[in-house]
Image (cartoon, rainbow, N blue to C red):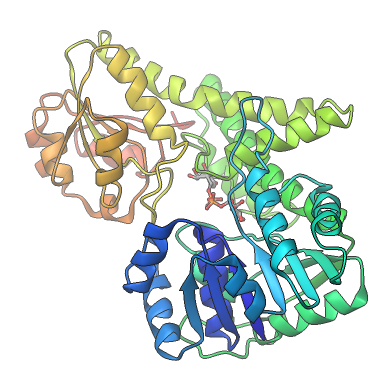
Length: 446
Ligand code: UGA
């Protein structure tokens, strides 16, 4: 099918590239000329594993191209996916001005019937608004509207897209559902070139077809539920610490083996960050408020999450007493491993708190140092974890990169002034770290 993707951020670029990979002809449009120029040169504006090879492969096959013109994309396509950003406004609600602008532009240049699909994370009822915009700016052409929320994680986005747990489609008309089912058919039936590990499941991917509003709520509810799981286990981590001898990792294992609970998203630590959970949670609380529902449960999820960086800094204080002028080595800056994304990254909050206390910080991250240099220019950066440890009074782990699992800790101990590690991500076995001669503080394990 001929597909146009508007917005080439994480969601748009991965969606467009993967649709071309499974056989569709895709044009990805963005009004950011620099970004489109980069993509046309075969370079990537973001780091996401497998994305570059798939972009290059499908551009060479002439299935994928980039443009700054919505008109060009709309004219060449039957189905248009809106994947533009919906950043938070001051009071937490999503800023929908890009969605509205794009809807207006699609309406004004369409000359034949189109199916317009919202993939950006938008408040429930946005579908209704998009319909109104179409009617206002083009009453002559037939538009169908659908919602198709994405569930991609940064760092595994390509693989998540090609091997999803489910595909959600919200429609008003059966025709729109049939079109989207056709687009997703190679993914539903695992029928594409297995460049990535193909699902071992012989079963088709479940397809949930519903009304537009339910599809919009599925997205909000899924992200909020996962955020709630993380804050829940972080609250349990605090209880484990207070009772003295309990270990939150064991508690999570014991809980997670119950299939009704599930093991995923029960990793206690520094809390959630990134551009999705914090903003989506805020937006959902605001949507509920506008509907006269006080979502106190989700406000508490946010509150617990906000406390995590402070708790970590308190742990450092509990051992060092005074932070001022102490050398702090930091390992990890991105909001999670596998990405260089630092938006709403909990490590930034920790660094800012330590900086306020007068710490002398030297940080290392395998991927996000360039971004970090712009965001926290007042700290020093190390070329590797050992350089970050050199002369440190404390080494603080803020992102659980695999690379840190195999560090030579006897070398690190010799490099440090005090053998003190504060681990915000529970990467290591406390008993083994103690055997290695460290004072090792972590989250929810005595
Ligand atoms: C999240 C969702 O997982 C995706 O399904 C969704 O599509 C995406 O948001 C979105 O709305 O676009 P992402 O933000 O990439 O994806 O990252 P996650 O892997 O979900 O992690 C989010 C945060 O939670 C990270 O800071 C991570 O460190 C933290 N986390 C995750 C924990 O603290 N504990 C856990 O057990 C799991």
